[in-house]
Length: 97
Image 1 (cartoon, rainbow, N blue to C red):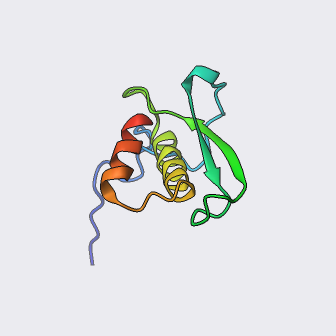
Image 2: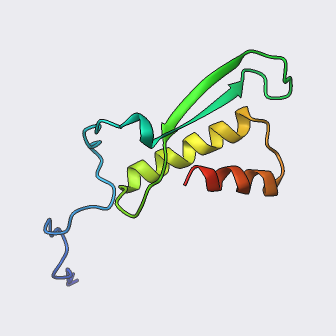
């Protein structure tokens, strides 16, 4: 049985979209951060509040890893703010972009 291998098989000339090794953390200016006050119990508005800051998306120069981290942070903020409807979630997400 003869096996044919494509020419680009095993080629390392292409850089992976999301490398397995994390990139070094860049310093972030305070102006580039979005800050939200989250409740420790989202259903109880009298519960303890915690400030949560994360990097906003600024343009098209973010790496895939930064975009994935931003999405996780936004989901965490929406949960902590107890925003359950799509309209309110959409309005808040627009502020973080």
